[in-house]
Image (cartoon, rainbow, N blue to C red; front, top):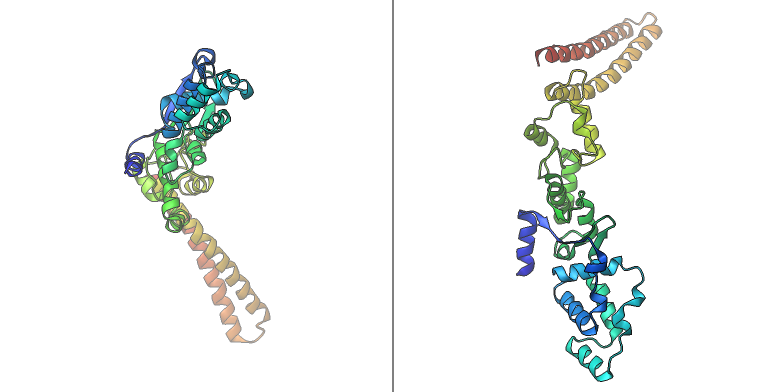
Length: 304
């Protein structure tokens, strides 16, 4: 039940993870000098609830501590009976087992090497279909949460790729499905254009601002929107015309070559002469169509 509730939270509201700031390691990272019983209790609590703030801080300090062989509790001199009592109380076989469990508690904790040090505990991501590494890559602002619209969109897109990989990949390739602009949910290209009312500006393709999910989608947007005078309507017309023109041009060239061949080798064959004339005529009509198509674009540009 706890996993189901957490999954609902992950998909409905901002996705946040346990976060601690270590501003002064000397004063905040004192667990190692607190004695065996204190550290054993913290490690046991971290095993039962890895997301709790105390475990997050403990793990952050553990990752900051370069020389882990000087943990005081490992060298603490205790009466054997007292040491055994502590180990039994917190269900550890020996002192080394405490350190081993501490490392296990910290497996999903990461730190940012900045000042102050930010400690992010991604343990809650274990019940999500996405891995810790994927969450970290989506969390582009390193806030220990999926909080911006762009991050929410990419989270949803990656979740769909896991839940329905075939259908989602088909939408990505067939409909240019992805994350556009500041939308918090994935859309196909034309829905995204309509919702965002994109203007023809190169800023919408800024990689730093993350307005486009992938370079492939960026190229598609450029092909559609980036025209001489801009505008989504003109861009869409150009997008269609470019494909048609390329096909018509190839057909016109083939027809022109075929017509010329017939005229050259026809001799007195009136049928070949007629075929050659018709082929050249169709080629001329085709080239006229190409010129007319761009004339239409110019007219539309003047209107919009």
